[in-house]
Length: 244
DNA sequence: TCCAATGTTTCGCC
DNA sequence: GGGCGAAACATTGG
Image (cartoon, chains in turn green, orange, red):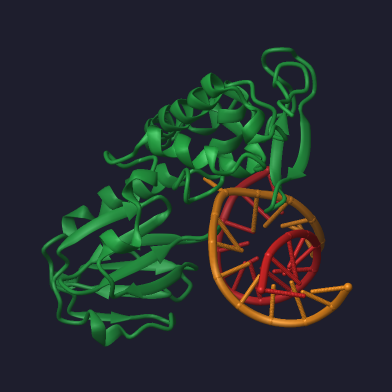
């Protein structure tokens, strides 16, 4: 479910609840439900993979993690972690996710320019952040939420393949022009991901992720668990350049 | 039936 | 105390 583009879809799905009052909030999540009960939703935002349901002085942060899901005016068989009830019997349920209340001003908590889906996204700032991590592997940089908030394992694999950068490349050794390309392509691919996901055709556009053969060279992809998070990484030794 | 997976945090060990 | 790895969380499809 959950890379940045999927969160944009979620945000759009619950946008109609903006301005509506939460009559009741419950679920098995550990949360001070009374903090939002009776309050009106002022805005729905996202930051990368975070969904932010905003109230006047407080925000509910929902992170879908790996298996999270949601339903609007529908129930799943399992108990929701968070359930928000509105007038006319309307409700939103969140399952298997991470829920947290944020009391601080969101502008102090979040760097909006890091969110690849945001109009405030800044490629220039991303470049500066890459510069600060010369020893970081490319495969880790593409998953770093402070640099590319909203990028996940699919986006990572596809962007590295598209830009022909080997996942084990060291950021500091990648030529400046290529670093800029990496940044631009991450932003571009995220929006293609969004359109394909909306149409239900995302999978058929994967060129590297979960693929066995390189579509350029027709040789087998390597599949390795790389980086700090030991995440599945698919790459081609022939066309993806190792900068080291 | 079993395994792995679009994610992140926390805990224990060295 | 930093860095690393395993565990935890919890669901679904192949």
